[in-house]
Amino acid sequence: MGLYTDIREDFSTAYKNDPALSSKFEFLFNYPGVWAIAWYRIAHKLHNANFKRFARIIMGFTQILTNIDIHPAAVIGRRVFIDHGTGVVIGETTIIEDDVLIYQAVTLGGVSLEHGKRHPTVKKGAVLGAGAKILGNIVVGEYAKIGANSVVVREVPNNATAIGIPAHVIEKGRCKDPFMHNMLPDINKEMFEYLLKRVAVLEHILVEDNKDVLEQDLELEQIYESFIRAMKS
Figure 1 (tube, rainbow, N blue to C red):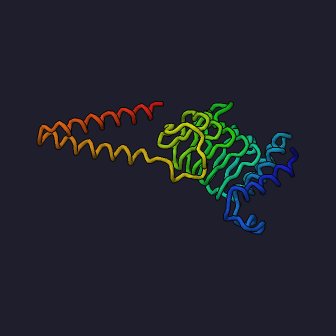
Figure 2 (spheres, helix red, strand yellow):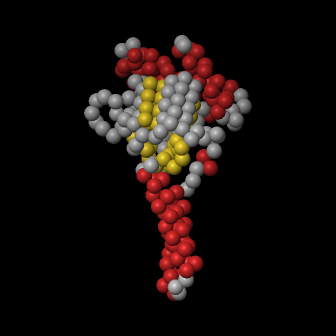
């Protein structure tokens, strides 16, 4: 596909991913992610044609106007949509495949100063939640979902959901609705809930030798072991 066709497709993708968009006029002022991708397409062509300095200048001005930092050498596929966009950083050796959805403040960064592939590869259909940091030469699998503010330093399998700092895979199997971020479990809340219940059980054990309480403690121990196994998987 040609450059014009790719950019036109980027604009049409916004209509599919944002129900708040009601007119083409709004593109001028309210969709920096779309403009950043459009200017990236031009800069990437120039970069590949060995006009690297000019490409960097274009993306420098784009960063000032949109607050989105995309290196022109990065490889970005078709129908990639950056929603809101403020604070997004996409590093030099990043590869983003088709139909990826990126929310604001996402960083696709490196953890090494060495030359070569040092930024993430995001496979098609993935959803990167607001504030997510995906660092290093790792792969986020097809249709994977990264929870908001998660820090991903290990590979995420296809059709999996990862959350936390550092991120852990907490669910496998393709999510039916990639926009349902409110359905992601809160593992910190679940862990604190377990600890509070465990303390209550132990207090009862100290007060009285109750068989029912001991059974509750055993049940909580099984829940805890399942939780640990989930974190290690």
